[in-house]
Amino acid sequence: MKIVACVKYVPDTAIKIKITPDERGVELSDVSFIVNPYDEFAVEEALQIKEARGGEVIVVGAGTETATAGLRTCLAMGADSAVLLSDPVFDNADSYLIGKALASVCRELEPDLILFGKHAIGVDNGQVPSIVAQSLDLPQASVVTKLEILDQGFRAERDIEGAHEIVEGSLPAVITAQKGLNTPRYASLKGIMAAKKKKIDVRNLDSLGLSEEDKKPRLSVERITLPPSRPPGKILQGDVSQVVPELVKLLHEEAKVL
Amino acid sequence: MAQGILVFMEEREDKVKKTSLEALSAARKLADRLQETVTAVRLGSGDASENLAHYGADKVLCVRHELLASYSTEGFSAAVAEAAKKTEPRFILSAASAMGRDLMPRVAARLGVGLAQDCIAAEIVGEGQLQCVRPIYAGKAYAVVRLLASPAMATLRPNVFPVGKADASRNAETATITPDLDAGKIRASVKETKASSGQKVELTEADIIVSGGRGMKGPENFRIIEELADAFGGAMGASRAAVDAEWIDQQHQVGQTGKTVSPSLYVACGISGAIQHLAGMSSSKYIVAINKDPEAPIFNVADYGIVGDLFEVVPALTQAVNNLKK
Ligand SMILES: Cc1cc2nc3c(=O)[nH]c(=O)nc-3n(C[C@H](O)[C@H](O)[C@H](O)COP(=O)(O)OP(=O)(O)OC[C@H]3O[C@@H](n4cnc5c(N)ncnc54)[C@H](O)[C@@H]3O)c2cc1C
Ligand SMILES: Nc1ncnc2c1ncn2[C@@H]1O[C@H](COP(=O)(O)O)[C@@H](O)[C@H]1O
Image (cartoon, rainbow over all chains, first blue to last red):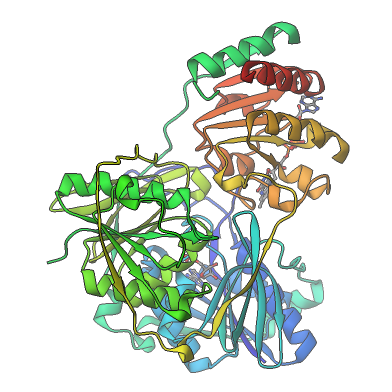
C-alpha cells in the first residue's frame, strides 16, 4: 500500500503565548517546534500498516524550510520519503490553500490512504483533511481511534458524544487520527542515521498548479488576544464543617449554578 | 443576493440535540440584527415534535433521502451543500459537536468557502459580515476572525451559546426537498453506533463536571468523584495523570489531548492545574478547585476554592449538595 501522512510542524504545546505587536499573530521566533502530536499518530499508523501489509510511507508537509526538521523526524521514525511544499505563504494561509496544495501533491502520488491528524495544535482547526478529501473526491473518516485496513476498504472507530461510531468505507480514503489510535514510536539512533540519507523532495508553490481561486483568502484574522483573565477567586481555608457549607452557599447564591 | 441563516440541526435517536438548539438560538439573534430569516435544516427522519419554530426557525427545511438513513460525511455534506445552493443563505451555522466538526468542513470544502470552527462568540460587522471569536493554542489565545466568502460558515462550541426561551407563539413554514444524491458517491458511512459504557451524562454536553486527578491516589477513590457528580446531576472527568495511571477510562480525560469542555461549573479535585489540563476546561463559567496545596496553579483560575484534603472535602460537599436539593 502506498500511504501518505500529512504532517505539520507546530509550536510546542507548552509555549507561553505572546501576542505580536500588530495583534494579529503569536510570537513564534523563540519557541521550539514539534511534529503536531496528532500527526505523529498518523505517521505511526502509516508505519504499522506498511509493516503489516508492505508498501511505502510518504510524509508531506507544507511550510517553510523550518518544517524540514519535522519531516526528518518522521523519516527517522521510518517513513520512506518526504515532500516539502515550501513557501512562506503556508505559515499563515487559510486551510483552503493548504488543503488544495496537499491535494495537488496527493493527486500526483496516487496513494491508497491519506492520513492526517484530527487537527493541528495552535490553529486547533480540523479542516485541511476535508478539503483534501473533497478536492480528490475521496471518502473520509475523522477523529479515528481505531483503524483496520481490509482487503477492499477500511473499518474505523471514532468517538462521538457518549458513544463511538463504526465507519466502513472504501479505499483510497482520508482518515484523521485521534489520541488512542496507537502509541507513536521514538526514532531510534539507527533511524536517525538512516533519515539523513533519505530524500526530501522540495516543491515550490508554483509547481502545484493552484488556481487564483484556490489562493483567495476565505477568512481574515482581525485580531489575536489573550483570553480575558479571571477575577481572583475566593479561596476558603479552614475547617471542613465551615468551608463546605460556605462553598455551597456561594455556588447557590452568588454563582447560581446550584 | 445571499440572505438569511441556515442552521444544521443534528438529530440523534430521532431527537434534535440541545447543542443544535444553541446554534439555532444564536442564529435567531444574528438574524434579528439583520432582519432576515432563519432556516433550520433537518436531515433526520425523526419526530418533528420539538417545535423548531419556538426556538427561532422561520422555516424548517426537511431534507429527505434514503441515503441519509445513516450518517456519512459525503452524503450529509452533499445534502447540506445542496440545501445551501437552493436557499442561498448568508451564513451557515452548526454546533461544533462531533458531527458538526466532521460535517461542516466538508460542506465548506464543497462550497469553496471559509469556516470558523468551534467559535465562542459570533457577531455581525460591516455590511452583514460574520465575525467570530475562536480559541486557538488550546484556549491560551483567542482569534477574532472574519469570514470573507459567501456563505460564511461557523460551528459553535457546545454549552457556550444559551438556548433561547421557547416562544410558543412562533410558527415556521415547512418544506421538504429530496437532494440529488448518488449512492456511488457515498463510499464511507456509519455502520454502527455503540454507547460508551458508564458515563450517565456525556462530558462535552454536561452542565456540571467533577474531575479527579493524581490526588485521587487510586482507582477505587473515583467513587467519591462519581457520587459528587451524581449529586450535581453532572458528569465525571479526569486529568491525564489519572487516565495514564489507568484509574479511569480515557473517555473522561479533559485537556489538550482529551476533551474540551465548557460547563457552567467545573470542580477540579486533586488536580494541580497544568497548562494542558487548563486548555480543556478554562472556558468553564465557574471553576472550583479542591486541593491541599494552597500554591497549586489551579487556584489561579478558580472562582472558588477550598484548600484541604479532598478525601474529607468531597464527601462533605456531596452531602451538602444533596441536602440543598432536598
Ligand atoms: C503534550 C501534552 C499533552 C497533555 N495533555 C493533557 C490533557 O489533555 N489533560 C491533562 O489533564 N493533562 C495533560 N497533560 C499532562 C499535564 O502536563 C499534567 O501532567 C497533568 O495534567 C497532571 O495531572 P494532575 O493535576 O492530576 O496531577 P499532579 O500535577 O500530580 O497534581 C496532583 C494534585 O493533587 C493534589 N493533591 C494530592 N493529594 C491530595 C489530597 N489528598 N487532597 C487534595 N489535593 C491533593 C496535589 O496538591 C497536586 O496539586 C499533557 C502533557 C503534555 C506534555
Ligand atoms: N501545513 C501543513 N502541512 C502538512 N499537513 C498539514 C498542514 N496543515 C494541516 N495539515 C494536516 O491537516 C491536519 C489538520 O490540520 P488543521 O485542519 O489545520 O487543523 C493536521 O493534523 C495535518 O495532518
